[in-house]
Image (cartoon, rainbow, N blue to C red; front, side, top):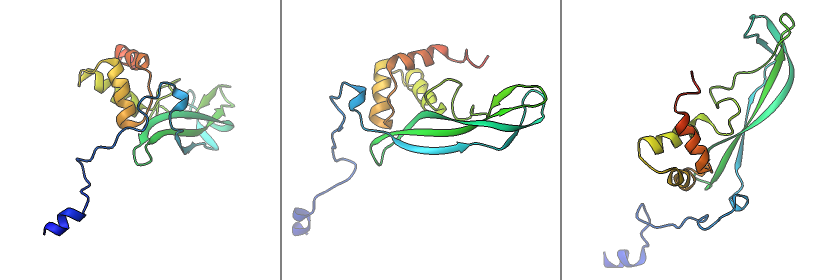
Length: 159
């Protein structure tokens, strides 16, 4: 039994592995993100204003920062290709609904926003600490001022 214990290196949850990104001060020096592509491009969609079936006018792309890939130890970007449609009846343009993924004009997925707000509100972390926690544990870089804006907006956007 003594021979077995001497020649086997113990690995497991107690092993300390230092953060390879500690000490990096520039965003440009962080690891490059893993790109995950999703498609929301449809040939026809019903117009949200009048209900008429509308043909696709063009396709667009939007990049969203998501919770990182912890196995590869790097951030993750979701690149969504979506369609824009033109209704021939009411002459309005509209995009495919992406509200389940992210808020309009947001660069981050709803999962990132919810986690950041939860860290500040429920865990009581300061904004800077919450920003560091998001990078360290989830590999998504969010400036602390952005986290502050999300917390202070706290439900005002939905009204």
